[in-house]
Amino acid sequence: DWSSDVCSSDSANVISSLDNNFGYSIATSKDFVVISSPNAGNVRVYAHGSTTPIQVITSSNANGKFGSSIDISADGHWLYVSEPATGVVHAYTTVANTAANLNYVKISTKTVNSNIIKTNADGTKLFVGAPNDFNGFNQGGNVYVYTRTANTVSSTQTISGVFKNDNARFGTSLDIDA
Image 1 (cartoon, rainbow, N blue to C red):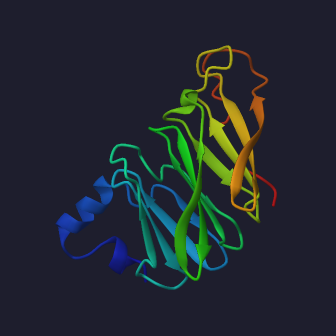
Image 2 (image 1 turned 90 degrees about the vertical axis):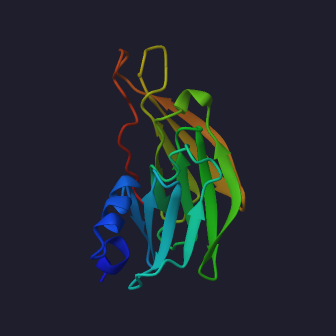
């Protein structure tokens, strides 16, 4: 029963959860459910079946919109969290039911306010959609591809949309086959 964590009989708590955008982005793996609250600047990691978070990861930047987009590998070992107002995607690893910040991916400043992220099943590939990017056109959009090797995440490719016009917003939605 998730209702005890999301809402309560106290209407102030319900409004507070809504103001913080609790549930704005949700990702699941075999062991975890991750729920973001971008206006609060945090994401909560739950074990399946629990209403109490085992970890709350909070950004040091109160206005970064941390958690606007999140994704977790199928095995639950890698969690990626966007912070679009700063142009950063953070990479976390889960060990013994905790999340420790190992690395973060700094995205080009052109991607500010537009990060949409998706990872593959084992968390070795990260795709970052940047629909507001200038690719020769205003909001033409790009998708940035990153590869994780051990604890290092490196940029490997930039994909631009085929529609060469303003407001094409390539990268607005992403999906990947495991």
